[in-house]
Amino acid sequence: MRRLQIFAIHLVAAFFIGSCSFSDSSIKPSRKDITQAVYASGKIFPLNHVKISAKGNGYVSKILVKAGDDVMPGTPLIIISAPNSDVNVNIAEANLRLSEANNTDNKNELNAALQDIQSAYTKYQLDSTNYERYRNLWNENITTKQTVDQAKTQAQLSFQNYKKLESVYSSLKARLATDATLAKQQLLMQQNIKGDYIITAPFKGTIYDIPVKEGQLLTTGTTSIDFGETGKFEAELDVDETDLGMISLNQPILISSDAYPSVPIYSSVREILPGVNQTNKTATVKTDIASDTLKFYSGMSIEANIIVSKKSNALVIPIDYLASDNTVTTKEKKKVPVKTGVRDMDYVEILSGIDENTALIKP
Image (cartoon, rainbow, N blue to C red):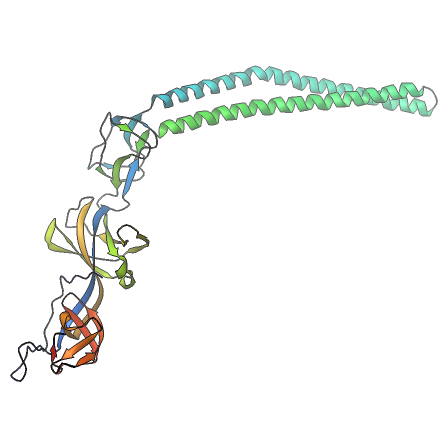
């Protein structure tokens, strides 16, 4: 467990180092203001920090911005050369034109098919009427059964031909519509793929770094732009997993930076990420960084103390007077168990077991 106390001023109420009746190595508990803090290290990043990557392979054709530029959403940042993508767009456009031409040419075919349907339906109506007429004549014994059967068969054939032509017309119409839709979708897809080779700003923000150069070969996933909100920063702090039980939201944080060694930066816990890094056994704690008076840069290193507990006028002893089994040794060399509370790098609070009159020696 790592602790660091860098800012609390201990106010001594009563601290005696020995007396005329004790040896020089004995002490008595004293009362102080004590603060317990969890140490963390981390970096400062712009709010909503993202590393924009290339979505496809290609060469950097043109870099349209520079580090420090403020841009609006959708602003083109980098153009990547992808000749195959251009060829695919041209092919898709040609296929769409061909599909549209086919639709124009096939309109006559559709009209002819529609006319065939109408003719077939007219013939079906005529054959049905003849069949009804012959059947009535048969009922009056004026015609033969063979004539009635022939009329019936002809009506059935006419109906089947009419339905067949309807099916052919529907299939042709559906096929032409599908071909046109597929051609449009193919063109849209190729245009979207081509659009992937133009890296744009995802939101209003600032270009913090451009780690690529014109002419450089990029592969899918290569970071091309370091991007984030303008003038708004946050800190990502690595907290040891053994200290996580003491961390909670809104706890005050005191941050120090090598860039501003004499300026304390005050903040509080905004977010505690739920995962633990298995490599260094730390979890990430996030906090907002006020940038009204100080100028920050993406990736700046910092150290921080997360204040987990404060106690005023606490009864304390130097931490090296407390044994590992939570006992202290009196002047008479008697081991006494104690209950402890807040502690920092130098002192530990004593809740019970001894009082201000107990003389102690190091265990």
